[in-house]
Amino acid sequence: MKIAIYPGSFDPITKGHLDILKNAAGIFDKVIIAVAHNGQKKGFLSVEERVKLIKASIQHLDNVEVDTFEGLTIEYAKRIGAEVLIRGLRAVSDFEYEMQLSQTNSALCDDIKTVFLTTKPKYNFISSSTIKEILNNNGDISKFVPEPVYEYLTKKKGNV
Image 1 (cartoon, rainbow, N blue to C red):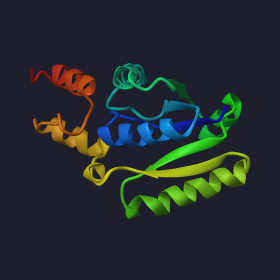
Image 2: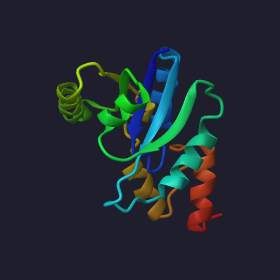
Image 3: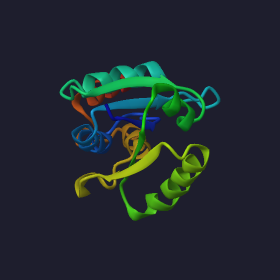
Image 4: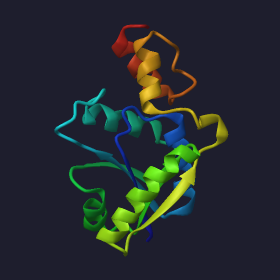
């Protein structure tokens, strides 16, 4: 069984993330969305909230699971037996950073490969930071996030 992990903060998960995830789920036997927990950073949403929202957003994907981890992604991948790291690319500007990250991970463990997947063009501009900015300025995020995320964030913000 070929296991891939899709690591990130997913703070919050977007339709772009889901597009990458759907593609990965069609390629690999099992995909684990690995939500990074960084105790030194205050997230927009707690790790628990992110996991809950991701689970609600991926119910239609049978071979996808959600987990959390702390520390180096490559160490987490080794620990769970993953062979592949999924990294999403929205635009060319993402590539340099992602390539450096991939090469660093390869230097740490050459057995785990990185696969880059791109989003559909309609999701190229969507980022979690953009979602937070729109939400904090009372804008409509419904086009950019899965329905469970939209409902949760608008209730949390008090806009509903």
